[in-house]
Image (cartoon, rainbow over all chains, first blue to last red):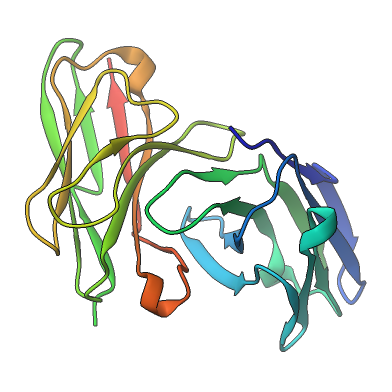
Length: 109
Length: 113
């Protein structure tokens, strides 16, 4: 299967700081998503981004498909951003979809 | 729209007992998935159904069976639960017409004693 490596594994930020999370894939994918798992365990869709750049408020993501990596940018972090951020990808709907082990983010006031 | 719903939210079983986890989606998606999440790990695919009437094994299918009852519903069955199946189970759905983006249910927390 496809290996998904996320870095860093843990991150502690002061409120208001910016951060970049990275996701590397061992093989090409044409589905790629970023999720936020909140402290209650709910998985929240952040971006569906097989290629290119998208922005949603303080969050943005960039995927360079040819180099098999994706970046998630969090600007002006807030305590509500705390949780675990996962990237996941695969080939075509209905097939295998592989998750990374996540980046655990703690934002302190 | 409720999105993806799962029942039950919590369950405790004894080793050897059986149970079925239910999942339903109201987004008219073609594909549905079952994942498990163990502490400190990402989600791992158990089974998926690309379309109504088809099911395929994922990364960790042993000890599980699935049924795609209709387009809306996809159930996961544990025939003889084992402590190693203690986990949080997530159901998801997606559709190629919507860019293949997966949407997840709230999860079922299962403990096997």
